[in-house]
Length: 563
Image (cartoon, rainbow, N blue to C red):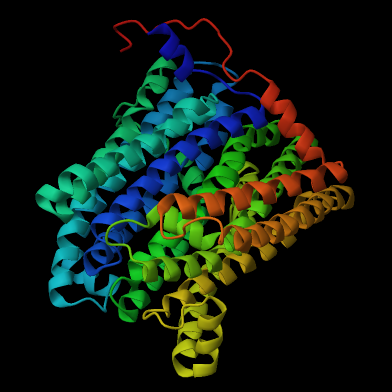
């Protein structure tokens, strides 16, 4: 038991080590996520029922983002760092502040969920106006079930500020793993018994596990949340003033997805499903690379800025940015080249047909063009949050989210109005004989809006924090990695064609080996090119892998009173 507690309470001070731990468990979580999507593809396929399930997430997600982000990790951390003053357990000042946030959050979240529960029949036609009356009725029921998940995830997000504050990335990284376990349980065991309601219950179970796994760290550092009636409204007002711009930015991004789902509901049955399948697949590298490095860097960035160590702050941002580019650029090329193999291996089962594979793969390719920019956005935004400057990234995010909605409407209109444009897109991705190709325009709009977001954010961030030498260093990494990634993609494509005559592409293992071996050979060529460039990130990865991740140390088990 001591070994388990020691592992859960392992602290990581090195950003590379923390990022690798986060990436490892993020990868495990994404494996479970892919199993989740495979189960959905197998049992339902792109269908009206699955469209209802995915659409039912939109209002609970919007509620979570709009309220939970007011007391998110990235807003709370600087306040808690200041109040702890280096202590490893909760100081009275820090605990009192945490209790105030906990009390207000729970009251607002539960109250909002109750209100939305009764308003759901009015909201459902806005979420999916293309649904039939029967589908809308089912959407109302499933959405009401899922309203409990933002409450649980919001609490988990709140106590996650403690696990990140003390750099307990191991337990923090376990949370999404348990979340996907709950969802899988709902799909595999509850859906055959009670249908979509069972899947909704699985989401609630997963959210509960997401929350529960982080409780031991909170207990160990004496940060157990309690209700309070004493509030420092001046301090709370300051926190809300900082978090409100970020909340607005996240809310408009969620609103953009709401708008896309609404438009997709008119394209045809299964369109929302295809969009979500491909969106989830492109989220894998974003979670493994962008989120892992940005989450690992954030506590250190906040500490540097709180101590007015701007040089350390910039060095940390630069290091994380180069690592993100190093990992995400090759992944982007591989996802575009191996898109059909990725989709078929992950989702190709049961009700998921070959036409579904082709359309989802084409949508994935359009999502993939923004992977590098999206991953860097995660880091740059956290850099601004650590510096307490939330307004600038939020203004850019609001503008870009609006562009996504505008682009989605314009691209879909062009696609439906001009046959030549439609023919060009369908021929480019070889989906001209498949219905529902209008969903490609939703992915294209999302990627274009995301890239605009990145370029605007990068331009502003350079002016605020970076000098010419730092920018030149990042550009060097970018061009070295781009060159290597290009050859990775080219070599992978060549071997993809060669292996098509070697393996039986009508079987799972044939498709898997074709894509896997082509990618491995391409990556090997890319590594050689980076070594010829004397790329510093290759050496850093080697050094990081040589270090021990699991250092033994003594841990004092909390007393029964604390428990």
